[in-house]
Structure formats: structure tokens, C-alpha cells
Length: 158
Image (cartoon, rainbow, N blue to C red; front, side, top):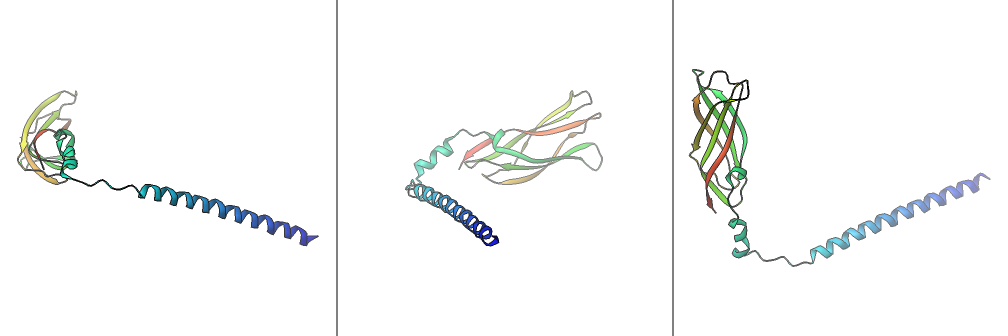
């Protein structure tokens, strides 16, 4: 009596293992088939004409130049704002120079106390990141918060 029940238990567990094996084998076979189908496509040769459209896109310094960090401190006397800025060029086609920026100092009523504009004199090649230290303006009294943003730059195609 006990032997019969044990024999049925072994056959059902064997059937489950075979079923799992078949499902896994089918899945692996399907993945390998899809990989072989996509791997047979010939790669298009990269030529100067094919690479040109990427560089021919319009330069957009406001979107290509990302401010990774902008920290404002005051100088030793506590009167002049000094910005420590880290900028990254996300473009793959353009070098940017004469990077234009704008700093805004805002009061407690969210009204701008002072807006200053300037230019960072370095060049930023595609994929390059640089730091800048910018002596800005006399720090306005009553400033609640401030911001730094890129407003433009001169692009040069690579």
C-alpha cells in the first residue's frame, strides 16, 4: 500500500522535471533563434557622408551644455559673489566657446533683486567637462535664493 503511493509520487515529480526541462529548452532555443536572425544583418559601412548628418544638426548650447553643479560663495570680504561651476558638454558634434551665463539673485518676495550676465572664456570640446570660478557682482543684501544658468555659447562643428 505504501509502495504504490510512493511510486505515484516519483512519477509525478519526474513528469514535472521533464516539463520544466522542455519549457527551459524551448525558451533558450527561441532566444538563440532570435539572436541568430538579428546577427545576420550586414552592418552598414560608416562613411563621412553617413557621419555628416549627425554634425549637420543645429547646435543648441542651452541644451548641450549641462551645469552639473553651481555653488555660490562669498569672497573673503563677504561682499562679492563667487560661483564655482562645473559644466559638461553633452554634444557629440560641437565644441563650445565664449559660454554665456546669467546669475539671478532673488529676494524674499520672489522678485529678482539683481540679474547679471557674463561670459566664461574657455572652450568645451564634445564630451568634455570643466570647472570655472567666476567672480560675479556685489552680493545683494536681502537675497533669499540665487541661481546660475547657461544662456548661450559659440559653437564650432568638429
